[in-house]
Image (tube, rainbow, N blue to C red):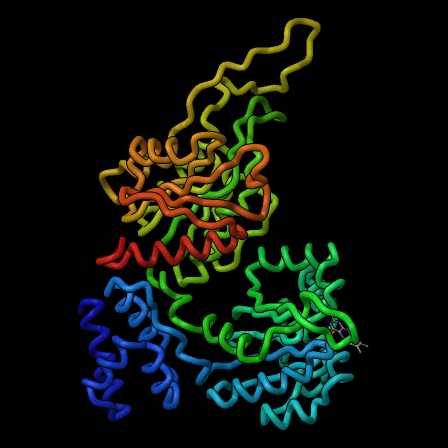
Length: 474
Ligand SMILES: Cc1cc2nc3c(=O)[nH]c(=O)nc-3n(C[C@H](O)[C@H](O)[C@H](O)COP(=O)(O)O)c2cc1C
């Protein structure tokens, strides 16, 4: 059965179940997939499989539009309420989630209970509110792990500066943080705090670490604070914004690469000179790791072949750690077949021709001369494969001058489908930095992307890849 037949069969089951006419379904689906999902979410929640299929079906139609959220209907939402003034807004959030059919379970920190009572929260969730880690009734079966596992999405609102710090540090000294550390589901945090707290270098570090760990953020927004005369960035996102983001996390749009295998290379390579010295480069691996994380979040099976980096392995990704360019190529070839290969690693062009078996000593004589030999070209090798060439081979061109021209040459010379060109000259701050300005070069032309955090570059790239893999895509 083809994907389309399969999809149509599911639609028929759906039509029977809901009594909706095929004409109406067709009209709604083509005009606005959201309506279909809204209608459906009033009944039982659509299966993840149907949602994936709708996503691909729509992508096949060539549009950029992907089906919008199926809603949170039928989903388990674990809401962690932190101790900030914005906690009162979490009551509205519960109401909105429940109205849309989500089963909301609330966990409150001790501080949160100073702002809203478990009684009001429980009245809205229509279930018990969890507050303590060492609860004798719950912990006979390690209830905090059960709560962490039962959720389809975990929302932290408001996320205090303190909760962000604890999450970033991996603390687990109360129920909320223990659950967050054990979480398997996507975690969405809605920070809320005084603008000075938000701007503090400690909070900036924590937020960055959490983003790298794959935590999703909504807000904070700019505006007036509860404290008289204070304004700036720190207001919690509005409940409708939090709801929309949670819906997106649960939607097929975030599973656009379901069923695909994506290989990503990341970081530098290290080419040994002797047992203690090596040649390397300044690549941090941030961009490649972000791409691997974004592809995994989009439902792909991801193999990340990484050179030595100081980053944690992204969640839900198979990571192969390598040192040299030759090891990296071997690991990429071993991971084939794949639908997509994104070569984001900064592979050393040369290695030392003869690695010394023992440490080279500083004698009194002339310094040693290192003879270099050329490393294999991983991008070109994969792009030119006859057998099991990935459908889409994407390379990176890190250039310090004549960026677009050099990237176009690289596209041709290597046989890649796309080159993402980025300026890595000294003043750009790209190498090792958090942001990137990228140009996507294909045979069709050049797309200039704005300066974006590397995580957003990754998300955009994943969206473009999903479109390109659809039969009518580019
Ligand atoms: C009136 C009042 C308002 C507060 N509002 C916030 C806030 O909006 N954001 C925040 O990060 N901390 C706020 N705090 C501080 C937190 O309540 C405090 O850091 C607490 O330890 C957080 O605990 P939790 O992270 O376990 O919920 C506030 C404290 C008080 C007394």
